[in-house]
Image (cartoon, rainbow, N blue to C red):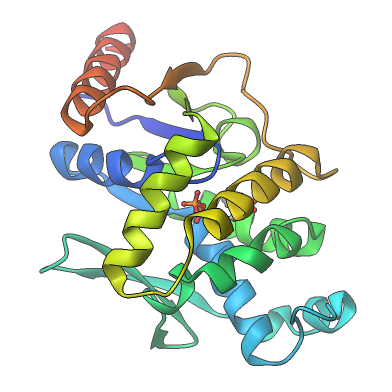
Length: 231
Ligand code: CDP
């Protein structure tokens, strides 16, 4: 089978990364979580005091971009690659609601996007990749053979993310998570550089009422159809 590029875009907390990991594992493909890279830059900015609830020194972040080295290392027991910032594993640190509350502001900055998009294109240059994010089918891999766009109602998404955070032991409320999901959707969809839009040739999947198994089966079927059509 010819290796293809699978781009999965969509709103926040639509379960993109869950299904992307499953599909990559099944196909023996590389999975890249592009959102983790924006979260890593945000985490760096928080650590350096460049961003907090009162201010965001955009110029300061842009001036420091050369200091930010993001890498992925496969964790055999987890079955996916964890994200590292300047050699430190930050996989858990970037999933907090606090990081989520700042990340869309950081992702609006063109200099940040240019840097990360270049790295993402490098990670996927040999195909055989599943990448999820907001601009993968539109900007990062406009020639991807399969483009998916995931949606679900804001309430469904907030409930899923709330459960994840509670399971981690984070003290959050459902209302705060819902507010974050809605605010990120707004900023991500309305920013000037690479807004979240459905690529013309993307297949839309609303997974509000789909089980994980149903979603996996549907996407795998689309992968098979795509592969057959290009053989
Ligand atoms: O929380 P969720 O899994 O839905 O989001 P994520 O994939 O971790 O992405 C976090 C944030 O990074 C998004 O809300 C966007 O602001 C930004 N992002 C982006 O701008 N472009 C991407 N390709 C991926 C993420």
